[in-house]
Image 1 (cartoon, rainbow, N blue to C red):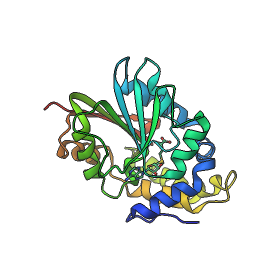
Image 2: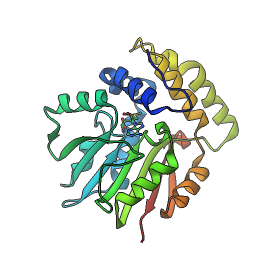
Image 3: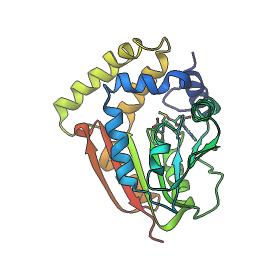
Length: 236
Ligand SMILES: C[S@@+](CC[C@H](N)C(=O)[O-])C[C@H]1O[C@@H](n2cnc3c(N)ncnc32)[C@H](O)[C@@H]1O
């Protein structure tokens, strides 16, 4: 089974997600102890997409989160570079373009969309997997309309040192074993743990958003900081 390393070579990342696409959503529910549903609901509320808007759900995978952005009538482009994840998503929904969600192949580092296409752009658990997250944040800024918004939902760090260390023990020790309860492909979940530990904390990620051109940047913690929702706006 292919797993990516922390250098996040695009071919390794895409092939790793191709390989786990079928059981991806089930494993998420199990390893997050069901918390992923809360995190997704909070993301939908933060994006707050409404009728007439066009939303980019980048690194959308199987599109688990994409459909929920259409609740008030917005249309969503669910973009990812893993053909495996896109195919599972399209198969589950009965087609590549259904009920306001259109799946599209594309690389976060060179998005196949014109400047200022989207009213809102969002990434759930995808930015960490890109090979150059600063470039991805700049690309997201480029394709967002002036006045548009960005919401990033990503694993983060618990601000209390002792708790964060305990969480690190769960990530590095227990998480791959919990994943083994529902999948025989455990290497990708070792990568998951390592990539979370290696990811910048809330403040450092906020600085990266600002460096990529996003303004009025703020964040809020979910599940004590296990996940953080970052928000920014394109002002010019
Ligand atoms: C952990 S999954 C998240 C999927 C979905 N957003 C969710 O919340 O379940 C990460 C996704 O990021 C995608 N990804 C990683 N790097 C990418 C890139 N450079 N361009 C597009 N997608 C990328 C992977 O293919 C994978 O589907």
